[in-house]
Image (cartoon, rainbow, N blue to C red; front, side):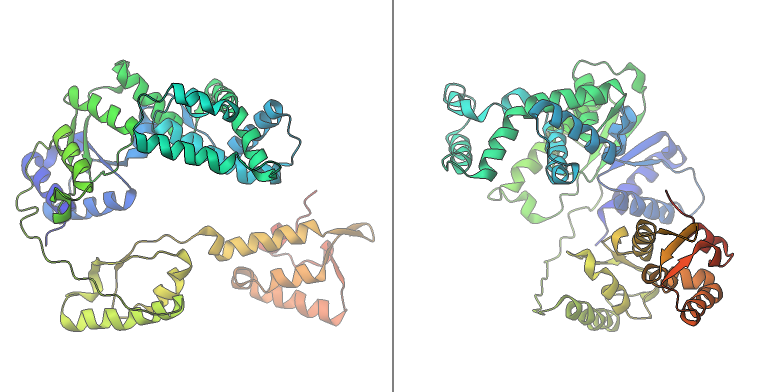
Length: 438
């Protein structure tokens, strides 16, 4: 079956050819954009100027008057506002969990263009909601009441009491936090989404120019995204393509089909994707029960070998159309080690977390080393346990193996409990690591 992105690339190259560079293609994520460029290169068969490839998040950021704010700086700023408004004296470490949650909630509030004043109303006055529920269904009203009932009935419950106290200040916190960000010209992602959508609503978009946008493969649209896409559509600046090939998407009894029909009707396509949807194959799903994650990774070797032997992976050296989807990033390394040697390229849908990388443990060792430095005979010295841990780290031994071994032998020979800075070998990396931080 021909991939959806291949069909899109094929149609646009057939109709626009070398003029493709005048368009900006907007995808839900970078991976989709990479595959689109790959297919476009295959279809063209010659060098050509590539169209601009961006994600939907990057599109909003490019149209916004704000600059993306650093998340750590936002957490510190939010902590200051929370302490001032609530009178809380809790430490930043204690606030961090709540702060992350609040940033995520504020992000959702803005992406869905919710009235924050109504959302963050005081829980002590929640019964007044009964007078302002005409716009809600009975199901929604029941859900709201169940939510409040869960948090309110038990007196003396510290967690619920804290939730209620926090809820009281959320609207003021939300407003003052956004005001300071706006004053500095910064914003979190949802705030940029809302700002762009509100400008699109009142048509304050002259500075956006007349660039042509092609939205490809989006699905669950937020209200902010819908507002922007409708505005660009009305200006004749946008085209839309939906990956709705599954027969379940066209089943009237399937609730997901309602949103499909809405998107197809509201955002139609300029070009017809020839043959797309005509080659639907029966989906085959096989469930294999394996108790451990490592066991699952090891079984992958057998599955891939069988796919190669059966010809389903026709070219093992270029198996990019075979996807390995991981629910847990901890499985990534076992999976990579389990891929048969004859497979050159394969599509693994998971990034590698920085916390699992060697450089992360190296930074942790350096932090411990510096935290436990001390003064010894008038100079900075380091405790032997943290020195040895650093010298044994793979990245250090790779870069300065001879010097690291020499220092370890020196420590053993002279039975060093602390290692003065003057005894650190004159290797650039070691000198940098052992430079005293005050």
